[in-house]
Length: 158
Length: 158
Image 1 (cartoon, rainbow over the protein chains, first blue to last red):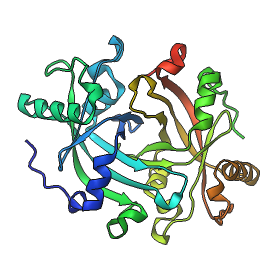
Image 2 (cartoon, rainbow over the protein chains, first blue to last red; image 1 turned 90 degrees about the vertical axis):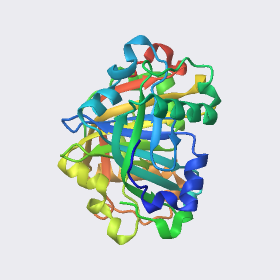
Image 3 (cartoon, chains in turn red, blue; image 1 turned 30 degrees about the horizontal axis):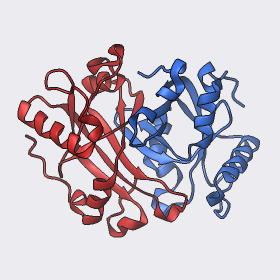
């Protein structure tokens, strides 16, 4: 398991609340040649790291063949964005986690993340997702930025 | 003005409709060292290119000092994601535009984009945004992917 200590920002109660209600994140990866790529994804946050699973897709898109996974294989640097949009822009907010993506190797860690993803997203419960077949990725954060009036003192947007 | 021809995908009526109702996009940039970064942003799509403006922020974050603008200055490759999330996952969808970001130099193009951004987002009307002060970026697409049942035949996700 990962031994990194969560930056204090992720321990802020307002940030925790924001992350706990968010249903979707956007992940940016980049090839070794610095060409970025971005996708929406569902995630589980364990208080330190963010997890996402590669679920069922048409054959040609599965697993390591996905652009996001090819990028991660050659360049583990990733940027994970969790934001809130509404028409009253005084309520706009985001949490940005820049870090590294690692494929989860251990079965115990995999099963824990899968269980929690299924708790959070009932949609995953009917999907055949299994260790050794569907890749699980752990996003380890290196730095965290938060932006938005709701976070006030924690604002560190860049 | 840009002479690139819009890929046929962006001329698909379903894709056009999807882009016309979307209120927020996510932009991924990468430093020359291939470290990705991502932010939410508001955009105007003119049928070929995507425009966004750097609006007012605290002084230290303004214009070229923003991480996204530092990245664009050293590496114009960007990835722009417009997606739709809802709990019925059969309705998930996204349009992904990989391309290059260019700072708008011409006043005419700048004013046209600003007028359209203000038409689309009344929130911009009360902001002091002006040519020579607030940077405007034009995202030129090099390739476009769409994903989601609603697009059916146009699906080219990667």
